[in-house]
Image (cartoon, rainbow, N blue to C red; front, top):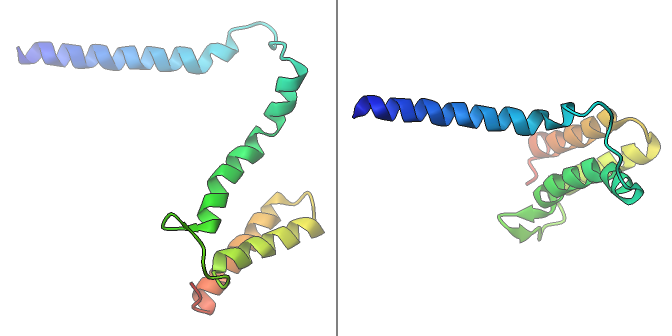
Length: 114
């Protein structure tokens, strides 16, 4: 009976591999790019920014599930530094990230702020 469990496990793994490969490579099958309605194409342009904001905003403005109560939190200064850098140099995304990360590390390590 133990051998049967091994066969079932391998069949399950094979089925999962097939489902994963089929669903992830489905967009490669058509000969031409699918036509999307204009409203959908316009909305998809904003998807990366929306996903990034969905990850970053709660991390910046929440602490243990509650809104920040202390305006001296290092995260707020890091966001301000990144925003100022972005406004000064619009197309430098890497610099914006580095400015925010450096400010966060300076405040947390150098100044001992929260």
